[in-house]
Image 1 (spheres, helix red, strand yellow):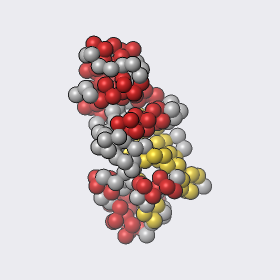
Image 2 (cartoon, rainbow, N blue to C red):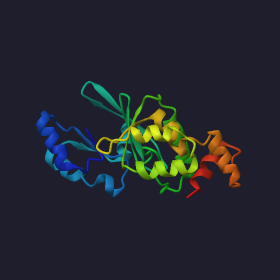
Image 3 (tube, rainbow, N blue to C red):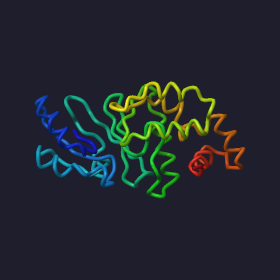
Length: 209
């Protein structure tokens, strides 16, 4: 199964090396930087192609004796989804390692609920995102929480050639999952931003550049 398979040459080489058959081709959402490889992969493999919306409708894919599950996560885009295989989540542009995507859909409350749902997965869940913004996101996280020592730990575990984190890592450093952190709440209050509810705190965080 290829999700957001833009690296078509590398994927094809991997399939040949390991004598694998590509059955499914799909995406975390329909933005062109995530769908660019779909046509070439389908032509090369004959695998069945599914849009993100179609994958959400299907809800799960049988694969190699297991199941890949699909969850709707509207916010970054209206058709955003994440894929779960075992203890791994492919989160596209909904949840990055250290930050989150832009809310291009305009559905701020939906985006908040999507992130809240992802935050409820087991803490050992491994997060693979659609882009690597770790350096910039940790600089911003440190700007908001300069006393957060978990940021140093997070950066020490960062490997540019294999970018991933656990959900616990994200809960420890990602500002957009830390709207209940006392340090974040104090920061928002100091700037005169709304903090009465979880959604107000998250929305206030989204307003900080």
